[in-house]
Length: 329
Image (cartoon, rainbow, N blue to C red; front, side, top):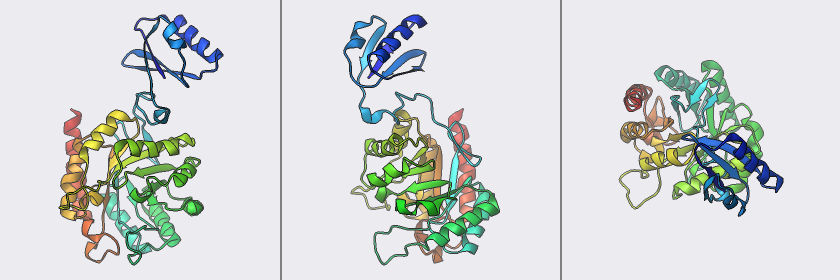
């Protein structure tokens, strides 16, 4: 429950109410939003209605405790090996869908860094719709990704599908939870016990609130380092791989304090659509974008059709910076 305190209330009176609630077993935390003092009370009680300094009581669901902007009005800003996300820091996460070889990932890492990337992506274990599709090269891919970081200094992002493999991801800076695992609650609970940054993708048919609920599973375990990702949803429209729900970026920025990024590559399914969708995400207020970049898309082992080249990525990054500058003025 939230107790909205009347403006101009003396500090002593607020402290009296807070102490009274604590003495009766209700945990209380305090914050300010637009100059208004708010007490967040754990549990439900009729006591709040007895205090004349309380202007109104707002009931909130327990599940909104950690991700809701109501409880945490200020944006959460993250810094990952020097890469800032939020408060003007835009994360451009770029790299191939899958790590194919040591030479491939290091070469692409160097090219995307020069083109404006702040982080490097690359999958080692790839959950695919078809069992006959390329599934990644496994732990060796994580080793190559780590080498690419040493060569370029770019923090790394890679998808984890099984918590039993967590030890293998020791040198990966951000663990990605893919759309297929957004509601793998056991995985989310275990990731909540780690101290790793988690990039949580929206599921194929998940609502915004369901995405936030999945974030709560991680945060309820004690890990507050969650980054949300809009990657398109499945609708009746089939002109692109998925429908890019750009409105969800604006909605999430209003509902949660967590950083919100976009994955236009998976939404588009085609490289030619990646540029405009990235620009749309920037205009909607996203804190970052994750793009699939490959130096030879025609021969990529995974999702080559939606991968842009390093030169195309450089153009996207440059124009995106201008869009972000324009909307900040």
